[in-house]
Length: 319
Image (cartoon, rainbow, N blue to C red; front, side, top):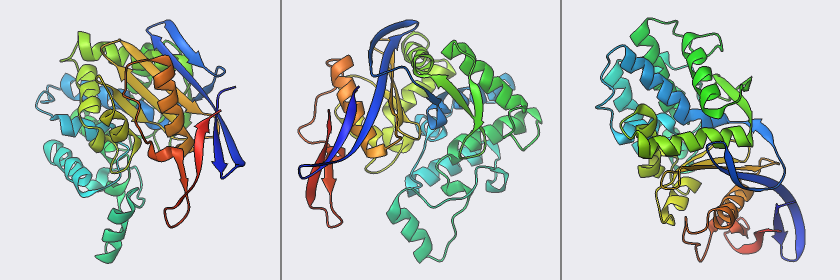
């Protein structure tokens, strides 16, 4: 079984098995590790955002003028740095959304320096600092446009039913439902089904670039920093890409990609959910299953095990 091994000097400290799948539509082109079923978590955000945009467009709201950066923040698991908060506020202003309407919950910014800055200024963490606040802003906007109930989180809500329908169609598989960290439904699917959905995103980027799905995919590929943040995996991956890649982390060791030039989707899942092991597995899976998509880096930060003062004391490798 493929696994990421964490070594501290010559001591094997932990082992993290993983699976990966690459597919074009229904055709599985390659795989590593066993079949796996898991939750999409934040890797569902491109499809959740697309549904919100479809609802807004159905009400003749102007979605064509939404910028690439605003689309990116709608898919983001952002670090709540100043640039991220500015984009969320821009979407709020566009659609008349206030922060009090968000139901994602408050947590500290993922970016430690940004969290420290809020505390130094005597501020408090609010819903806008939640890494999902962009997605939730678009969900609120969709509800406002239709006069739907403003608690948009239940699976029975009209917006969530539409999101479920889209994911079922694109994945070719009816998902099991759970509750995500931000309170909205999350979707349990096989990795093959997730990859099928991300392959559909890749195709839309090329075959229907003006569609909401195609525009969302293009934003993911163009704005990896807004999708994530400083020292995060998406910007690091796109920096070594030889071709466009729309990439999105989920949670608990999930990472999804769409490669439009090849019309393929790819999903990588660390069975243990370990985030540093995920970055090592993603690099290995891309090099192994999609040769030529990236320029293998001389150094990969997540491959190093460092102590508290930054001294490298070990390594993570695929065993």
